Image (cartoon, rainbow, N blue to C red):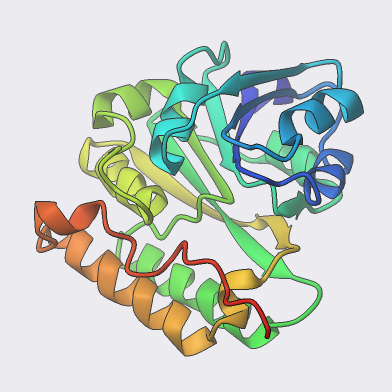
Length: 239
């Protein structure tokens, strides 16, 4: 896969403090589309730091809507979905270019690691990805997953009713649409913001496991799909 075949797509909402490190990890020749819902100057900071090969769209919708909105104008066959609070590992795009991608592939699942804190959680998440892949169940992270635009269209796009877990859910539908989904642990991003884990590792694990299980087996009632069960809850301020 050539890097010219890839558009990086990132939703942003008040990520001004994070975008510098994110952009520094992105090669200058890779196309970036950000879909921004910020009021802290994130969009302006993005264009200030990376005026070339960068497009910013404004949309106040949720994360799956932002991911779908960014995918629509992307001119490349492959769409690399990520988040602004991570950094690509050095050499990420060189490894991506060396990756052997079969014609029938519609998705590629990368991994999310950490350099600072919560290492046990990220190791557990990685092993969970390996196990689920062996069971032919893609366990994607929205911080590091690629979907071919044809596969995304055939799968019906992101489910914009969801408030979270839209990443794994769309990759399941890509697989069910008949496309191969590759697991590529050598494609790594590193988490730089651990706000949700800081509220409790067990809470984060139970939240993901419960919602993903219900979604995978189509047991989550429609009226609950837009509820995030506290996932996007802001941490309480110290008194």
